[in-house]
Length: 129
Image (cartoon, rainbow, N blue to C red):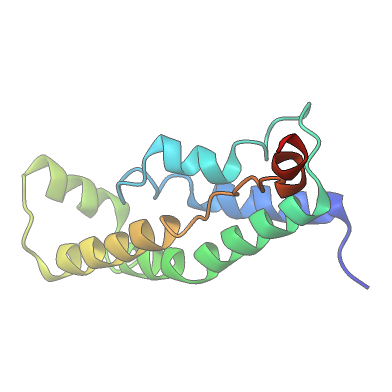
């Protein structure tokens, strides 16, 4: 049938672990990150299966999509060269422009987290009338 809850949690944590170093450079704030993974690493929080599935689906979508684009641009140049660009304040090279664009997409995609809305109980309101 479907995957077990523990397997989905393990995969979701793996997706996040692979991406966590690229999120701050892409200007994804800690608050926005915590909105997605806040309960993922909390062993005392009992996540329901639908929450696990939503979190897994979202992290997989980001990991397989815009994160891969950032990763591909990063792979164009060795890590020490990226560090040199920062140290020498070089900002207008082609690979840097591509990286900024890929990071902007990653930031935008991460922002598509939907907050859960609490349903109002209309019955309670009507009962008090």
